[in-house]
Amino acid sequence: MKKALNQQSKYEWIWYVLGYLSIARISLEKLKNDQYPKKDPGEKLAYYDKFVLLAVIWNIKHALELIIKHLGLMVDKTYLQSHNSEILIKDLTKRIKSLKIYKPEKIDELAKIINKYYRLEFLGKEFFIDKNTLDVKNSLFRYPNNSIDVGFVNQITVEEIDELLKDIEFVRRLRAILDISLQAKGKAKT
Image (cartoon, rainbow, N blue to C red; front, side):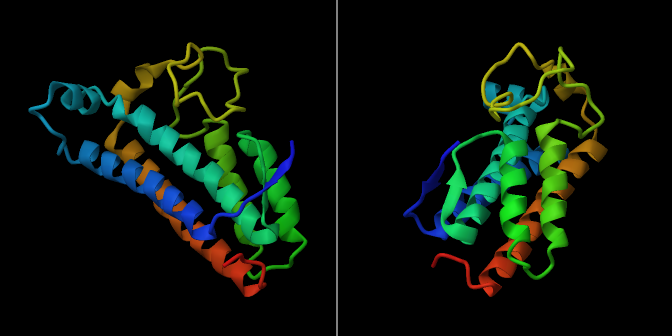
C-alpha cells in the first residue's frame, strides 16, 4: 500500500470528519427523541424502522478512517491508501509514537475505538451472518451486503443510541487532542 502525498489543507479532512460525525449525531438524536419527519413516507420508514442506523454506523466508521488519514498527513504529509482500519491505525500508531507527542496514550485510545468499530464490537449485537467476516474495505455499511444481518436495527434501545452518541463525542474530543499534540510538535501542515 503506497502512501499518497496530499496537497489539500488539513482542515479539509477535518470538515469531512466533523460532517460525517455531525450527521450521525443528528440522526441519532432525532431517532432517540422520536423527532423524525412523519409526513414523508420514505424518511418515516428510515427512522421508524431504524434503518437510518445503517448510515449512522457507516458515517462513524468513515469518520474514523478519515481521522487516521488526517493525522497521518499531520505527521509527515502522507497517508496510506487503504480502507482497512486495522492496517491504517497500526501504521499511524508507529509513526506518531516515534514523535514523542504530548499525551501519547491518546493514540492508544484512538486505536481502541477504531478497533471497536472495525470489528463491529459495539451495541452487544451480532452483525455478521458469518462470524469470520471483517470489514477490511470499510464498506459493509456502505452498500447492501449479504454478510450483515440488518435485523439488529429494529431492536436498538435508547441506551444503545446513547452509547453511539457517547462514542461520537469521545471521537470528536480525542481527534482535537491529537491535533493539538501534533501541532505542538510542529509537524502540522498549515
